[in-house]
Structures are given as C-alpha cells and as structure tokens.
Length: 220
Image (tube, rainbow, N blue to C red):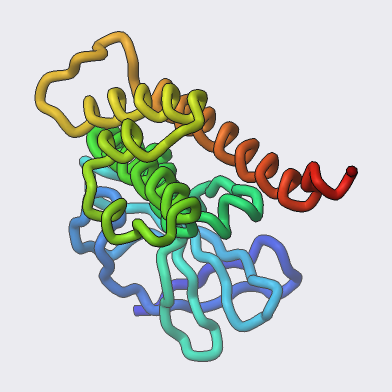
C-alpha cells in the first residue's frame, strides 16, 4: 500500500511511496516505519523522507533517501563525522598515520571509548616509524620490526621528540592494557602528546630542509 508524502521545500504537492519494511538503524528491528514528509533534493531525482520507528520501545526518527525515478529507497542517512586535516608534510611523511588517526577520531565521535585510545596508539606508531624511516631508509626493515619503545630509545636523536614520544607511548600502552598505570590521564592527554610529537617532527623536518637549502659553506 502506498502512502502520500508531502514535499516541504518545493511547490510540488508530494509523492506516493510504497510502505515497505526496513531494519531500524537504532533498535535494528524489522518494521514498516511511519513516513511524515519529504524534502526534494536539488538533482530532482531523489528526496529525503523523514521516518519514525514504530517499535514502542524505540520511536527514533531517521532519514531515508528515495529515488523518485526508480521508485525505490536507496540509503539511510547517517551523520557525517568530522575528520582532521594535517599539513602537506605530515600527509607526505605518513599517509597511514593520517588514515589511522582519523579512524580513531571517528570512533571517538561515536563514543566508542574502549577502542578510541587503541586507534590513537596505532596512529602514533605509524607516525614515529615513518618519521624514522624517512631519516634512515637503509634501516627500514629493522625499524618496522622493532618495538616502538626501542625505536624511540635507540633511533630518535632529537631530545624533544624523544621525550614527548616516550610519554605518548606510556599513555598509548595504557589504552591497550587491562590495568592502567596513569589513572589520572585519558585519551585527551594522549592526543595532546601526539600533537606535540607532530609539532616537533614538523619543526625538525622544516629545520633540516632549511639547513640543506642554505648550507653554511655557501656564505663563505
């Protein structure tokens, strides 16, 4: 049976849509949702349908995309999560870090607190190891296989990066262990330490490039 759904944003009267069952994105029960209104999308072929779960213990509202020409539902609209942008140096240095960090950031936005810190810890490992590989490409296999703590201790010479990265590892490891050692610290502190690592790594890379472009001998 079709139901008439009025458009709220265009002069068209509305559209008749077949009432079909769907899995609620909140309670995950199969039901025929209520449909209240439609917003026609700018391409003219699709519209957004405001729906409500009919389960008495749920009742949440959600939005579905309906293809007018094909007369079929497409997707359930989910909120678009934010992503963090990084400068070109970081993107080039470690694209894997950028990807893993933003996956952890997505988990944080979805309140998945038990896996968020683990994701940031993994992102940190890729950042540090990719940074070291950029400095010592001849040691790539060794760096990849080595424990991150040993990489920081044995391969990082910059004192600021070393001290900040060590502390980031302490908090990152806490996110993976059953018993926490740093009970007064949380994911926000881990993220702050990762930011400091990024800051000092970016500064070291920029300084190194400047010195390479302006060698002392050229001024004599």
